[in-house]
Image (tube, rainbow, N blue to C red; front, side, top):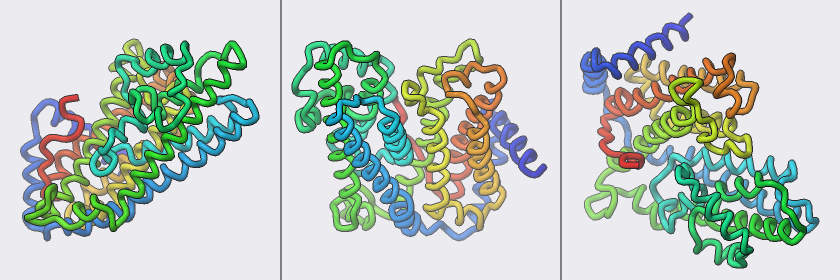
Length: 372
């Protein structure tokens, strides 16, 4: 009953936000609570986020990429091709690992277009398929070397290109199959290089961590710990916005008739639901491992309970979806569950960018998604 009451409250608050009524009252309550409470320890939030969330996530990504590369190499040596069950499972592991750190859009992942080279998605103009069709047709030799591939279009690299390659119609000749395998090897080797570089760059003695962990007047990016903590909060807020707008709203549409499930992330490999599960779980992890949840619980237990309930309800709901995303989006029996997921993502996004940010004394302003 308590959870039902909380979820009903979430719906009513979201409706009030959408219609413009009741916002001032709730916002004033959060502001009042924040003004009467001790300020958050921004430095600890930053340190906890790096140690408990960012570094472990990039470590998982690097490890999963290495494993996929080794499996791909073995499959190509034995002419098994790029679609064996083991490869599909390993690809799913890398995809979930990527989603677990996808919301971190600042720091070393911005260098050398690493973010887009890991996964070029969304791809509204279908550049990956168009460019891959062209280079595969002429068997461009620069595709099968990881170093030369790293210099090519971002649409030809990373998980998006690999998924497309894995789900193409079977090759028409042995030579074509071998070329595809060599290309897949180059993609995975390139992923190993990128993810390894990002993981290494978050080490305590590296340039970015010196800047991120030690704000000050002479710091080129962060003047104080408040600004560094704001980076963390923007990652959480933008991650939830991306989850709601791009991963759920865009493919689901407003009705079954307007659903476009092939706009979902990793739909070709049937990994969409697993990615969504990783999304909700890892954003909840950021909220808790950063220490934000503990602080909010101490000053506004109701807000913390509401947020945690929404995350938990999303994970429970996903476990009850027993068909692939592309089917569930238009299945009359499962569609209510998908709509509920979308509602939870939107509510988490609104609350995090509004009441949560206010409670933390962090004004978000623009984020990485604005202008997309």
